[in-house]
Structures are given as structure tokens and as C-alpha cells.
Length: 322
Ligand SMILES: CC(C)(COP(=O)(O)OP(=O)(O)OC[C@H]1O[C@@H](n2cnc3c(N)ncnc32)[C@H](O)[C@@H]1OP(=O)(O)O)[C@@H](O)C(=O)NCCC(=O)NCCS
Image (cartoon, rainbow, N blue to C red; front, side, top):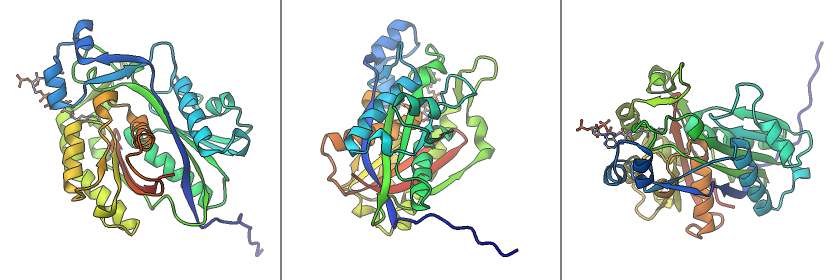
């Protein structure tokens, strides 16, 4: 037999048509953590991690926050529920193992029968999901894709444990990816280091997060600038041409050390960790959405995203802002 299967028409590229974010209203300062019984202090947290405050979800679920962020991204993109045919949810804090959350999220948004799946690449998850969305669009397998990073880390953190309770927080960010006549989402540079999978895990008995802070710190500060520079090269850019840099918001010292190595003195660096803490796969879309909302980068400007976290996984990609 000599049968050739047909493929759908392929657009030249993909782009982000709109972004949105949602953070729960309850603000928790470092002094609030001390008042709750965490053995820490404001000065230590600000100087070692850079966090002044973070948001904790009370009654809201991970899906609730994802719905709120996605609604804003859809409104900002001008693309309605009826035009979305794929939903990708990046999360590592789903309430249960089965089912994943993407189908429920889509249903809550009134998106009828889309392809729907979850990605768990922890804090690198949003960039993995964004790239998957871009590939689906450029392969002609989806018209418009909703990408959501949503996390309720407070469900998986011992909030009294000072190694993790001071860092992690809740929130969601989202993007709508659509076909384009030119490339608006550059090539991904991604990878993993499973030999160090033990560095961030959930404890089997308590299901709470544990991390080897210094291992993660050294790994991120020694490797992630190269990932970012490779992503720039893959997109055909020099790092000095970047308008913005939005790394995963893990630790302000990590962010600043990576940013310094990029040798892009005029780039606007996202430092949303100061007011939001570490929201894992939600941190990049929240920080990027806020950067645009504040007008810190122009429309059509190149912004480098670098996600990294448990796995260990990482992914870097240059996008053009909507
Ligand atoms: C977790 C992290 C903040 C800890 O900082 P650190 O400088 O490595 O801290 P250490 O555990 O070595 O402890 C240093 C000192 O601070 C103290 N300390 C640790 N946590 C503290 C806290 N929350 N409050 C006050 N003191 C603290 C320790 O007891 C120790 O005191 P000592 O020197 O008197 O013994 C840091 O390693 C980090 O941010 N790593 C990256 C983690 C990360 O980004 N994870 C997410 C990736 S997606």
C-alpha cells in the first residue's frame, strides 16, 4: 500500500494574542507569617529571598483562579470561548491525580469540547505549555489555544516550615495563542536534570513540598542564564535587543544573578516575587501580564521567558508581546 495522509494547512507562525492574571485577595506579609508561628523574620526573608508579601487563596481552588486569569486573557485577546479549540493547563497542584484540571477549566469558561490536557513541569510548566500551544497552532492542529498556569501551593506546603512556608504562594496567569503571519513565539530551549530530581519533591507521607534550597540555588544561578542566551540565539536575537526578561519568580537573588549574566543592561526585569512570592507555573504569566498592564514594555517587543524548577526541568523562549 502506498497511502499518504493529509495534514492541515499550517500558518507561518503563532503569537500571544492576550494575557491575564489573577491573584487571591488575601495578602500575607512576612510579619503575618511570624504571627502565624513561622520561625523567621522580615529582614531575613527580604534579604535572602526578596519576598515582602505573597497572596494565599482561602476558599478558592486552583481551578477557580485559573478560570479568573483565563477570562481576563480571553477578554484581552478578543478571542472568545467559541473560537478556542485547545486548553492546556500547567499545574503541579491539582487537587487529585485523576482527572486533570484542563477539561473542567474549559467547561467552566464555556469552551465547548476542546482538546484539554494538563502539563506538570512544575515551575517551568508555563513555558512548556506555551511551547506546546505554539506547536499545536503552527502544525495546524488547533486554531486558538488557551494556556493557563495556575497553582494553589498552599495546599502542598507546610506553612509553618521556614524553608518552604516563606516562599510559596497562590495565583494564576493565562495566555491565548493564535496563528500569525510571522513568528511571535520563538523556538524553545528546554531540558531537564533528573539526577537532581530529589532537590524538590513532595514528601510521600505528608504530601508537602521539601527542597534542598542551596542545590536549587546553585543549579539555577549557574545554568539558567545560558538557557536564556541560547533561547535568544535560537530566536535570532542578541540579548541586548530584549525589551523584557521574565524569569520564574523563585528568589530575587536568583533573578538578579541571571539577569546580570544576560548582559542586557536596558532590559526590564520582572521582580514580581517581591509582592507575589513563588507561584510556580503561574509566576511567569502573572509577572508578564503585570509588566504589560503597567506599560513597562511596548506591544510587539521581544521578552525572554525562562522557567525552571522541580524535575529538575527548565525552558527558555523569546516571545513578542501582544
Ligand atoms: C531556601 C533558601 C531561601 C534558603 O536560604 P539559604 O541561604 O540557603 O539558607 P540556609 O538553609 O543555608 O540557612 C542559612 C541560615 O539562615 C537560617 N534560616 C534558614 N531559613 C530561615 C528563615 N526562613 N528565616 C530565618 N532564618 C532562616 C538557617 O538556620 C541558617 O542559620 P545559621 O547560619 O545560623 O545556621 C535558598 O536556599 C533559596 O532560595 N534556594 C532556592 C530555592 C528555590 O528557589 N526553590 C524554588 C525553585 S522553583
